[in-house]
Image 1 (cartoon, helix red, strand yellow):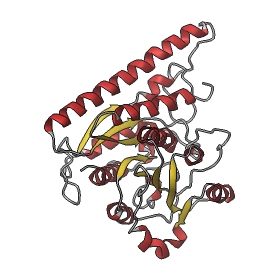
Image 2 (cartoon, helix red, strand yellow; image 1 turned 90 degrees about the vertical axis):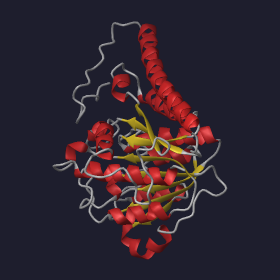
Image 3 (cartoon, protein in one colour; image 1 turned 45 degrees about the vertical axis):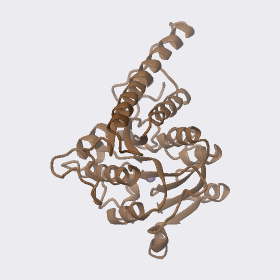
Image 4 (cartoon, helix red, strand yellow; image 1 turned 45 degrees about the horizontal axis):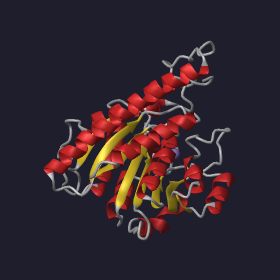
Length: 338
Ligand SMILES: [Mn+2]
């Protein structure tokens, strides 16, 4: 708990548990975790019941917020992103129809089970290994209810590991992952943290949760990033070659012979001109339309997704990047729901 207060999440106080017996502390933590899972389980169950009663949906996108920012190496603002992305999704400045004409106000297209109470759980002194398990279990609780498919709202990129792990374990095999990012996020353990937001794809590949991992938008990669990429057989598409790769990336076909496709979008895959509200500003990125072309043209069964690393503390007036993150969520929803 030593570093809890560092950079951004100021309201968390150090849990003064030195004088509390260990078993008492653990029992209390277990109660909080059970309460958190109960809320998600019952929300998902109710949404599932409603949708099955309505009928006509094979797959409905279900938002699950994961307000976690402490595994960031630089800023922790992504912990505050999920409610602001939701607000932008439903912003009155635009209508509720996606580009190809799906109506996200139809609960058969999009529904929501709220947030995993990450800060409340951490406030009880729960460590990251356990917290990651709670996130995985929460994703599985959503998937338990037909026709719900999870779309996780980050949070920093460390959440992709527990989300992908849950999806793969629940479906019973690996998925193909399309990962849009300025960074490969595949360090073995960044600054010694195996759960760092710079390391989720190392955990995912070690765990065998992905068959193919395609990384697109890469423009900040060092020796370790390339070596780890080679080690795990990652297909890394660097921005400097994007004009060459564009046709291939805008006509992807993924997920055949595995359990489906997972898309992870780091908002910093976009050029900062389009998305300034991120922790790691990295010029030379994708345009918003590049990203939409890649997602909209992709052929494959999208089983789950995440949108991560939106940092409201870096956004500009009017929440411009919140709208960008929200539109990514809306168009991923259009891809996933059927
Ligand atoms: Mn990134």
